[in-house]
Length: 258
Length: 76
Ligand SMILES: Cc1ncc(C[n+]2csc(CCOP(=O)(O)OP(=O)(O)O)c2C)c(N)n1
Ligand code: SF4
Ligand code: SF4
Image (cartoon, rainbow over all chains, first blue to last red; front, top):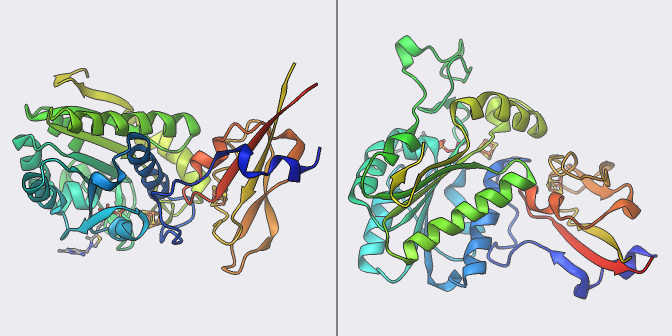
């Protein structure tokens, strides 16, 4: 059988969602941001809410998310995405509203905004891409940087006595009553991608049912910041990030499960 | 029994040669080319096209969404 007989439009089983634009992603080769974008946009397509959703882009490598996500988007000042999303959702309660933020954006400069939006139980979805480093600015230490991890601002490794412990933002906000669903996922394998997509779907369903805030952390790689090849960085992530940031649901139906 | 045959099409100009699609292929279909695209990235191609089972694993882990997957059933 000739390959040409297989490659025909009627035999297509997977291609990039039309909810992503045709622009070349500005991310480094192998960066999990692209996969996180793809599945978020697939969920909107699957739910038929593409034209009814507004995303809020952060500051960080995903600052240009609005160039890649083919939906209505607003870009927020560093760390302020949950506040901007609050405003949009309150003015336009019938729209689906989500933020997409890195760990520097969400847990460092935006720690306050995140905590209070979660505590108010805003009816939004927060997608939190945790790669344990400031990717965009050249690999500085983030609140989520692991103990002993070398970054450009912790060249001898993160020292707990002077720099504190890696912040588990997701466990922290899970304690707040306004938060309905909290989960931690990854996108490095096909199985992980499928699970993460299901979790994002659940988060948007919760918004549909007006049950409160849904928070999806995606533990991801920053191969450039970590100074590894993409494939090595995914292995390093499993060996080093997952023990400290374990996979799975943390809060379901408003109840802590972990 | 019907057998499945698959094939992938890689958007070579948008592939960044990251290689994350290679270890997730259960039948070792994909390799990186020796050649580069106009951006200077090596890119993926089907080294063993007859082994593709259209599982879509490669396509869903590709951060750049550059893989499309096709599938047919063949008698045999
Ligand atoms: C008010 C302000 N302070 C600092 C910066 C510099 N800055 C840009 S991106 C960034 C950190 C981004 O890291 P993260 O949120 O982890 O995203 P990543 O790039 O890793 O995806 C910083 C500190 C800025 N743009 N604006
Ligand atoms: S610097 Fe890190 S987070 Fe940013 S695009 Fe590159 S790999 Fe991704
Ligand atoms: S995962 Fe995508 S971008 Fe990376 S090498 Fe494979 S086809 Fe190219």
